Figure 1 (cartoon, rainbow, N blue to C red):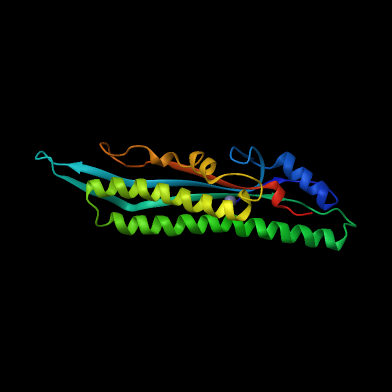
Figure 2: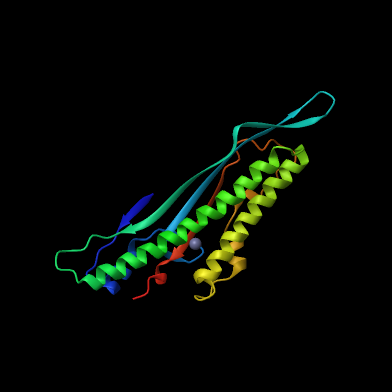
Length: 193
Ligand SMILES: [Zn+2]
């Protein structure tokens, strides 16, 4: 987990500080309150024989991922009213739950991918990677649309198109160590004052 520091003595000051210091999100077009960066590593390769037969070769851990959750950090000054601290704790808790949900979506999808790759042919493996990449992006976008995207006028289309670079054509080349970096963010206005 990473944090960025925010300051302020009241919810509106803290919200402003989040707006000024939060990680930038292309989709939102401004600062996010929290963000999950997912770095997916596939240790999957093709081996082709002289006869043209192709087999899928899986590494010890064929599908792995590193998640970096970015959350705001705030330290109350002495004398801060208890209700402000309570507001902050709730805002931070909701943001953490939101980001944790993205991680769970990835974990489920990648576990399914790993299971399916175990018995896949070369052409199935390529299709599985493409489908998983598309499906993970769709699920994460759907979650963000339901959480706040619809409310602030963002579209599913813009989320999907700004999302997964994993949709590259994988057909005729090895898919070993294909990096997929997908970020999903929650906007700063999800902090209710
Ligand atoms: Zn999100």
